[in-house]
Image (tube, rainbow, N blue to C red; front, side):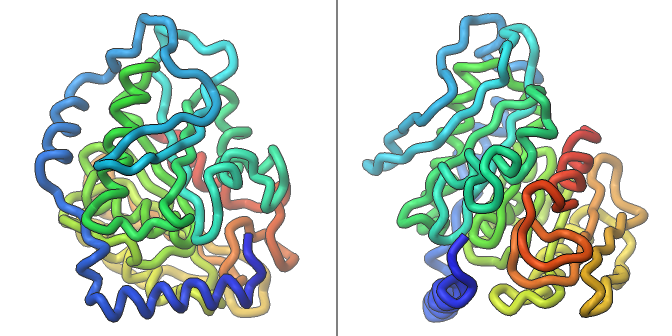
Length: 308
C-alpha cells in the first residue's frame, strides 16, 4: 500500500472533493439494474452450471457505457461445473490495483491474495478483483455499481455460482465501494466486510438488511473510526439488532476486540472488529504494521462469510 503520508494526503483530497460536491456525484441509483439483478438471483444455481467454463483465471474486460473496464478472475483449481461456488469480490484501495488484491503483493505475496481469503477458501469460491477507474471507486453516476452488475452477470453466465452466496470485501476506498454495494445491492450480496472504510462511493438506498462485518483501527487518522462506527450503525438499525457501544481495545494494547450484536433479524448478523492500530489492512496482535501471515482479519472475515 502507499506510504502513510502519501496515502493520507490522497484520501484527504478525496474527502475534500466529496464534501465540495455534497456527495451527489458519488451516488448510484437503485433502479432497473438492481431490480433485474434481484430477479436473476431468484434461483440458486446460475446459467453457467453444468457447462464447460466460459471464463478462465486471468484478466477479463467489459465495455460499460463506453468505458473499458477490467477485472481479474480466479477460478478454483479442479473446478467442478456441477458445483455452485461462492463468488467473492475484493475491491482495492485508493491507488491500489486489481493485481494488488489478486496477488496480495503489497502485504505478503500469495498469502494475502484477495485479502487473505483465497488461501482460507481452499478452492471453495470463485474470486474477482475489479479494477477501479483512476485506481479508485468514485462511483460517479453509479458507474461502478453498473460495472459490478455487469461483471456479476458475466461470471454467473460463464461459471457455476451460487447466487445466494455473493460476498464483498474491501479496504479503505475498496471498503467504501463494498459499503455502496451493501446499501444498493443488499438483495444481491449475502454479506459484506468493510475494512477501515468511509462513505466515499455513495449509499443509494441503504434501508435493507445485509449481513455486515465492520473492521476498523481505533487510531486511524485517514478515515477515523468514528466514521466506521456510523457505517456500522446503519446496518445495526437495518438488521434490527440491539443497539450498543461495543467494547474496543485500549490504545497501546496492540490487540483487537470482536463483538457480535444481539437481536438481529434472521440471517442478518452484524459484527464489529476494532483493533489498536491506524489505517492498515492486515493488523496483527502484539506488533505494529501489516502482516499477511500473522493478521487475524482474514480468519474473522472468512468465518463470517462461511456461515452462509
